[in-house]
Amino acid sequence: MANKEKFFITTPIYYPSADLHIGHTYCSVAADVMARYKRQKGFDVMFVTGTDEHGMKIETAAKKQGLEPMEFLDKIVEGIFDLWKLMNISYDKFVRTTDEFHVKAIQRIFKALYDKGAIYKGAYKGKYCVPCESFWTETQLVDGKCPDCGREVQDAEEEAYFFKQSEYAERVLKLYEEQPDFLLPRSRVNEMVNNFIKPGLEDICVSRTTFKWGVPVDFDPGHVVYVWVDALFSYYTPLGFMSNDADNLADMGANPRRTMNSDFESYLPADAHFVGKEIVRFHSILWPAMLWALDLPLPKQVFGHGWLVFDGDKMSKSKGNVVDPVILAERYGVDALRFFLLREFPFGIDGNFTNERLITRINSDLANNLGNLVSRSLSMADKYEVDTNAESREQKSDAELVALISETRVKFEEQMEKFAFQGALTEVFNALDRANKYIDETMPWVLAKDEAKRSELERVINTLLYVIDECSELLTPFMPETCGKIKAQLAGGERSALFPRIDIKKELENLAQNG
Ligand code: ME8
Image 1: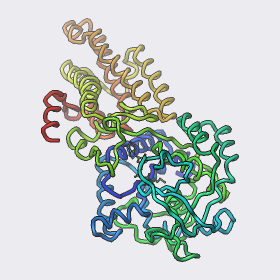
Image 2: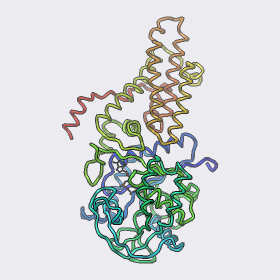
Image 3: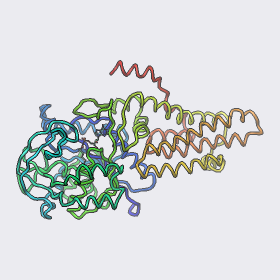
Image 4: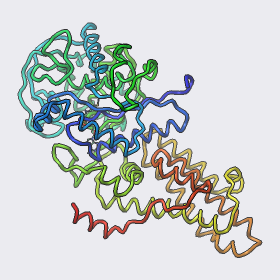
């Protein structure tokens, strides 16, 4: 274990202000696929996710329901555990920012930044967007509203601590220049430079006194730490960063992935942070600056993915136009949903979610292409009693398809390393397509009628099983359960259809009737 190459990946820690929707699921599925892919390649993977539980937004949401914040949070977080279990999200650590070890670590981090002179006390005057938990200056507002979400902002003035973000403008620019892959897709770099750095990077207010639901600044009672400082360091605190053994013994609940070990700091820094495009600025400006202030190495990559939109509008808990992943997973299967999310939408740009697209994709790729290939090939192997011993499969296979598979594997990995999930899946499905055509071309049912063609028949069937086996290995990170079933069927297990074809017309009518 000690000598294995490490891979540390994170999702954003989600606001548990309401149940999570398909947009959050999208990011967690992507990170999970990457984590599974790296594990499959032999990496020692650390996959961190969690919940961002402080701030005015949570305080307000709890109050609305007449609950104490913690009561409110526990219920929603329980639902998030269930959602990730349902979706097969193989995270290694789940951090809640209300965890005692995290709170203590954040207090130490805040003090360390203060002691180093990176944080100073001043007075804050400006605008605040409650849903985004973001401060804005007048000049940053768009038509007087929050530039991120377009909602109303409110006046805010208070004594506050500031982080000297302004000092890092040059260094951030140099980072983007010297490490062109630090922030992906590359177009996000221009957004950061033009919207935030060129207009003048300002110091950022990192404490509040107007509400209490946050990590208290222990050396200045009355102040709580700004949620983004609290949240960004939550990537590192569950690995023991700025923690100590006493904190580690803190009760982290019944979830086994919420315990701490001692050598986790060796995973730092992160290899990849997957984040939605609207929070790229925190990850590619504030986060590097705070890490520099503490003389810590930077994450290797930040990937700002697009939004899933519904009828052109961003899904959002507060707008109420959300798609529930639990309903979709129960109706169509977890793997079908996982697959659809990454096959249908290029990870770096927005994608329009519709039920029609989901069903069409399941039918075309999973039922017709993959599912048909597996069932046709296995039933022919059974019917014609072909010896399909896995060890000899490759030698007995058609050279053209063996070469195609090795090319597919190379291209697949190139795409995966760039987090281009759609591109990676396209490679695999092109190969599956080719295998389906190969059946039509070779016509095994004709070969089976002629004893003289027996070895040809065996070659064809072996080739098909070889392609299925190899493609299912590549698809495993995307569809772990389905690929497990394919492996079992290839090994002689019981035959069953993987993805039944959906009657799209009827299904859309059903959905329209049932909302
Ligand atoms: O921003 N499509 O939390 P959050 C795609 N707590 N992604 C979406 C989406 C959609 N429709 N809606 C939301 C926060 N997301 C902070 C993060 S990290 C240190 C702190 C994504 O619950 C969104 O883009 O509002 C973001 O990356 C993530 O869900 C969490 O959003």
